[in-house]
Amino acid sequence: MATTSRDYYQVLGVPRSASAEDIKKAYRRLARQYHPDLHTGGKKVEMEKKFKELNEAHEVLSDPDKRKKYDQYGADWEQAEAYERARQQAGAGAGGFGGADMRGGFAGGGDFSDIFENLFGGRTRAGATRGFAVQGEDLETEADLTLREVLTGVTKRVTLREPESCPTCQGGGRLKGRPCPTCLGSGSVMESKTIEVRIPAGVQDGTRVRVAGKGQPGMNGGRRGDLYLHVHILPDPVFRQQGSDLHVTLPVWPWEAALGAEVMAPTLGEPVRVKIPPGSKADGKLRLKGKGLPTAAGGHGDLFLHLHIVMPSSLSDEERKHYEQLKRLRHDDPRVDLLAAAQRG
Image (cartoon, rainbow, N blue to C red; front, side, top):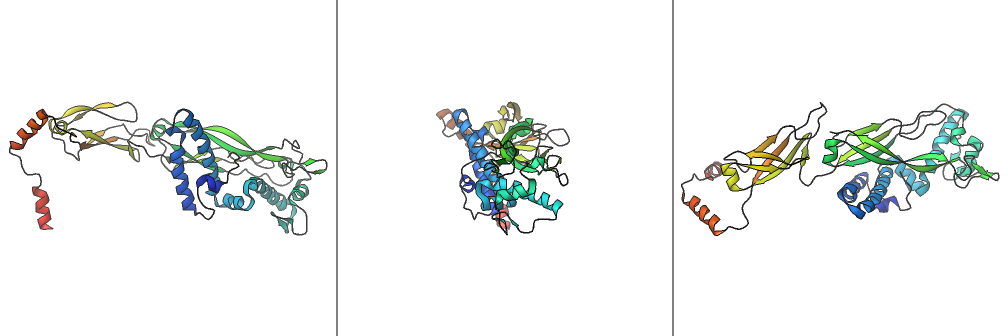
């Protein structure tokens, strides 16, 4: 999660009193608007920046604990969180600190940096060898996928934040006998890191993808936490998804439905030629086996074509002549069953 100077609530366009559901709705609405895959050229670069900022804001405000710290400490909430974990670890080995207060230091005096000094003697968190090994925290973020990315699988770039040795004090935590103003005496600062994560084909909406060892670093030799990606599949303008099956509306002319025809139909890959059976009805449905999304069992779902009979917007004299000829032929009334059912009701 990269550093941003903008207020996270402003990024999502919600008030500070917004509920978790309000935050979720705002994120999903803006994610569809800013998703880079929906833009091209220079606009795509701009949307990548906005989408990255949007994910940063959502990652914090959607997590109750992170949101609480952000509301309390603002842009410095991660430094405060790192301190709190360090204090708890050191406190477990020294019988606790009782009167420590994150906002005002110890109840009996001292400030934020002095507490770091008392805990670690000016050393970095990695240098605090006392206490048990502590596993790093897990990280969670969201990944938006198009249906075509679900079909083939995709590699996503994810930006993470993790502690690095402070460049000001070189990890020592102190400058000229005083706690370092950059890292507040902790010896480390949060830096951005971008990694690539492969999301397999066929992933379903709401799936939680685990990437082992890509979470926060551990303490005292503890192993790194894991990274979890929550998959959200974006709406598609053509295809409707139901599990591993896809559905699409296929327009046909009246004569194609009546006489049968061969027409081109869309798929997530290349268009395919399909046969419209003679006498097809307006609510008819054709099945293209194996043209859907990958399944957990290793196969593919199906693609269903829902026939929609469309009329010409205008008729030529020749077309009108043929329709007049059809009108004069004897046909059963297609409304008989409808009228009878209405009378019975």
